[in-house]
Amino acid sequence: MKRIAVLTSGGDSPGMNATIRAIVRSAIYEGMDVFGVERGYEGLIAGEIAQLNRRSVSDVIQRGGTILKTARSEKFRTDEGFKMALNMLESFQIEGLVVIGGNGSLRGAIDLMKAGVKVIGLPGTIDNDLPFTDFAIGFDTAVNTVLSAIGNVRDTSASHDRTTIIEVMGANCGDIAVYAGITGGAEIVLIPERETDMNDICRILIENRNKGKMSSIILKAEGFSISTDALKREIAERTGLDVKMVILGYIQRGGAPTAADRLIASRLGHESVRLLKGDVHGKAVGIVGGEIRAFDLEPALEMTDTKITDLDFLTDILSS
Image (cartoon, rainbow, N blue to C red; front, side):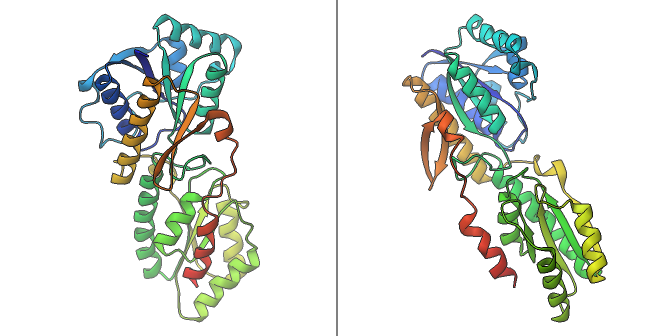
């Protein structure tokens, strides 16, 4: 295999640039030509494809976002758009494609694979909701961003004897909330994977107040069954506590990637090139137990995600 391409798709995540850098430099080291596709599948349809070299990825490892830009493409899901994407790969004589993104992006890679494209899927999402890898590229940075915010909010909450609900991203996955909740000392962590009774929430807050703890942090994943605004109103009505809410939003996606994310990104990027060089494709590549693992792409997305099962119970024990 002599000509490969890389694209980033869906939501951006810190470490995507480090991944692109590793792919480009590893490919060149292996004597391969490497191309960058801008704006994900939308750019692939439009032919926004350019050859990359070592200088193309200079001074990017520390930058958040993605130099290739990203987008969500409804057109790619149509027969016409999909055919145009295939034609572009053929026109540029691309023999292998690395797709960096989340669940939707990798399902697009599966469609390309079924059409005969040699693809490798890499996990790039702060949500960490891909079951085949312990950690996705960008997750560690997002957790550290939330951790910093918890510290800032806690200072204000303690000064005003206030209970604060902090909503974090993660779609229907509670990984960010659990990891940041444990390491940030949140009193309550609410995630979509576990039902939490409103009586339990209110009881914990009242018991904390009776013990002399006048401020509390509730870390809530965005996919939890109750909206943040509704949760705030009900807690205030039932407890009489001063309750505020903070929705962190897209600040969790930005910022310089942590050392952990840069290392994971570099390892996965290099492995994707190594596999394609050996004509191994149709794989999802992740980190399991600290080791790089490659799984068949389609079954990888259907695995059961149990990553936070062993950690979730700690949120109750350590917050009591």
